Length: 219
Figure: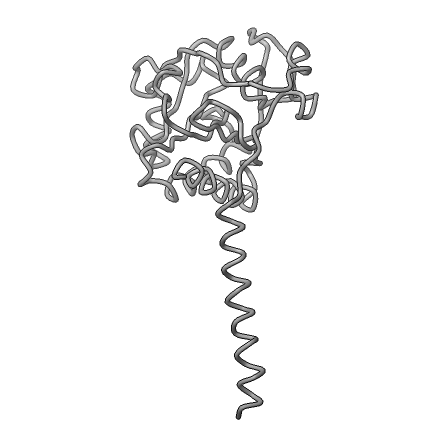
């Protein structure tokens, strides 16, 4: 019996030590802060590719699903996931919205966490159309925000602020963005992660990273 205990006890202590060490490592994790120079050049506007630090999501002014003005000021003190979609999309947007429902459910109690979905077809997706879409996907008011407004403004944000799309354009009549990217933004308006919004596995990584970001603000 003593010999068995001599083997079992160290084994148990090793397992406990491993679990504690893993938890400590996980709790100390810090997400990277992304600058344009670190990203795939195809995602970054040529004028910004040499920027090595201090990139932040800049000022903007759009309209939410309730018809109210929504600007960068409404996101002060919040961290959030941004995406670009359109309500009549028959392909990737369906999967993206399904995954964002997962994200919303995971963080529905966190008042500082938001989801911000920008339509890339503002000429079609009015506030009332976005409201119907929001209700269809059980979007929690003031948690999951849908934005429409000036097309050039939206496309500028997608390409020069969030680096969500590889295509080039000026937001004109024939310009179109179709991207599956989710972008995680912190309270300082810095980009902290990119994710494939059609991938359940990658969105699980997003959920994990949001929890890491939560702990960063708790410290």
